[in-house]
Length: 145
Length: 325
Ligand code: SF4
Ligand code: SF4
Ligand code: SF4
Ligand code: FES
Image 1 (cartoon, rainbow over the protein chains, first blue to last red):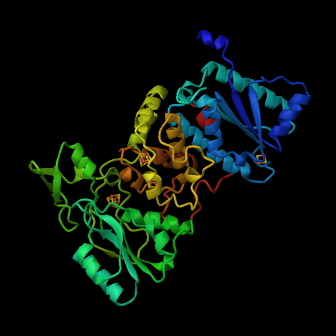
Image 2 (cartoon, protein in one colour; image 1 turned 135 degrees about the vertical axis):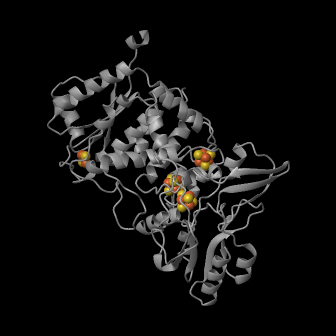
Image 3 (cartoon, each protein chain N blue to C red; image 1 turned 60 degrees about the vertical axis):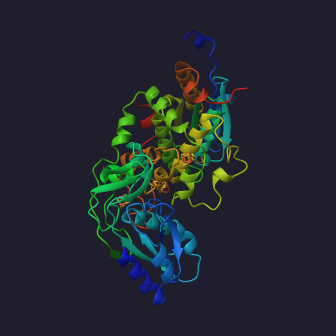
């Protein structure tokens, strides 16, 4: 595992505009640290995250994908995250069934006030992906340039 | 079979229906195909209903619902689940269908017979719906062979949901119990594999895929007017296999799009020219839905909300998956 030393995981974080993206903002303005390897993609609501987005992120080289939304009950569109929760549960279970390590995906509910939670979640997730290493099982199949 | 023809002729003659949707003889004795019949003559000449009529006619009712008058359609027990699901999705018009639920003694898979090493098949007898469906006599270029009817059945018939029609106007012909396996047994076997074994298993299966789209086209749940896989913004729309991750993407998304709506009718696995067991994907979603959100059988009725268009406040969190094992 010598490559772990130099391994810089690529992480994609889908964050809903109303809570989690604001949470990330707060983490930034409070000068809380989270690794620069996390690339945030802002979505209007967690419910906007089509399963294809997750797969595309992996296809394009992500080693881990995390989705963040408002806490259940707090979705700006009332119920979006309830639907997203079911979808992600099923999708992640399918990925595991196909032999993809189940720690490569995660869902976390982060409110606009939870800058600290945002930063600890991201740190934890990056550590997890570091321990899993490069995304070989999805990665060995993708066209690398 | 003659009884079906006579009944269809009766309904045509009385004007109750304008056409009949059934199966017509193929160019071989074991490859009938879906067809419309508009006259008594064509029914007499071409109509067939035997062990090889696996094709589920419910999806054709989308088209038939747009035609004038009623269409008489023959549906096997499993096909009626698809029809209910299509009603739920407002894709077929119940008023435009006259449904005769036909009995079923299990449908046959010519590929299963070939896989037994039977070559040069000319004719298969014993597949008649009125026979006892125990033994098939296969006439080949190299002489006659006998095979057990059950061994030659489609995978889905071994795990048949039962012989009760979920929706129909009348029932004709007898059925036979064919269930001799558990629906989720194969899924559980895969779930018990190590991640690497799972990965290798699916890689081997999916690398056979030629992206012919037959599994999508035949599927009664895949009835979107514009399919995501036909979009030219989707760069794998019609591309052949160049990179097996794309195949995986196609398969996950195809199965995901029918999750909660797939009735497990078995058509996708039946038509795949590469013999890919597509039911392993659909049934994984069905099994997970049952476990996480309570047992659900799509197509049992035409009103209940599907599990992906519903939720409860205390649904399990995705961490139930990402933190296990
Ligand atoms: S699944 Fe059941 S009803 Fe459907 S074709 Fe097979 S035996 Fe007949
Ligand atoms: S029918 Fe079989 S070969 Fe064709 S696209 Fe579907 S899985 Fe691939
Ligand atoms: S995915 Fe397959 S089993 Fe499910 S409804 Fe479609 S054709 Fe039938
Ligand atoms: S708006 Fe944040 S999850 Fe819906």
